[in-house]
Image 1: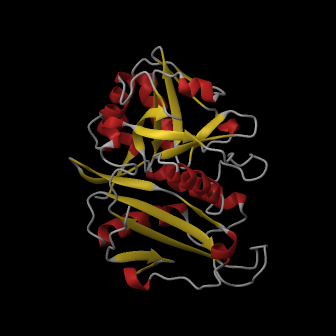
Image 2: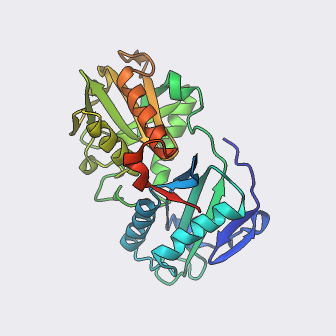
Amino acid sequence: MPIEPVSKVWMDGDLVDWADANVHVLTHALHYGTGVFEGIRAYTTDGGTAVFRLGDHTRRLYRSAALYHMDLPFSEDAITAAIKDTIRANGLEACYVRPVAYRASGEMGVSPLASPVRVFIAVWSWGAYLGAEALEQGVRVKISSWKRNDQNSLPAGAKATGQYANGALAKMEASHAGYDEAVMLNNAGFLTDGSGENVFVVRDGVLFTPPISAGCLDGITRASVITIARDAGYQVHERNLTRFDLYTGDEAFFTGTAAEVTPIREVDDRKLGSNGRGPVTKELQSAFFDAVHGRREQYRAWLSYLD
């Protein structure tokens, strides 16, 4: 999905023109993947533009940075304020937000410790990640031949730039085979997640999702949907799942900041029972969009308003 340029990007405390938001070719993160990031969305609401679960995203950014021994030169409050400032500076009512902390140019070699930490925040208008029609019709997915990184190799709890090469391999394989997305297994053969989304299976009105220990990201949208589902009276179980569980589910869906709540209609050419957006997925998807747009009072605390 092409990115539509905006006016300003926040870089190390300054708002610079989009065309001038550049880094050096010897940036350590460019060579070794030594950066951490977040994916965040801001939505339109009756009270103006609001960022969804901004505090949770900022805290996770700092947790990721701590794992990689990165001391960010800005406080969490400063990054939170900078995200809001960047949205305002570009006049966007709804957008995707990408804060990145990375090791800049300084010293070449695998160790990043001698390279300074820099931070930028970019925002842009971004529609449905897997396509607007997918929100209703669902997507076709493939179980990838590429396995998810082991937790003791690259911990999924941190959103590091380099580790997403693993998901990129799965995504490209799925695309070349004619599918919309991939689902990745761990080395034990259990489901983890998509190339960049968490996954849920619905059977007999009960929700199942892989545990964080399986190797999936501790997704903020995942946690939000679990809360919404339990509040609606659904049971949600976090347990190891096999591809058989996915093949035989009544419904399945992805969650994520980019994907939001996207139904899965087919896995490895096997149609799920719903063959599209099933009733449970539809209910939870509707409740999720109500929450992010400020239409559910009980979830209003998840929103950080610009004004």
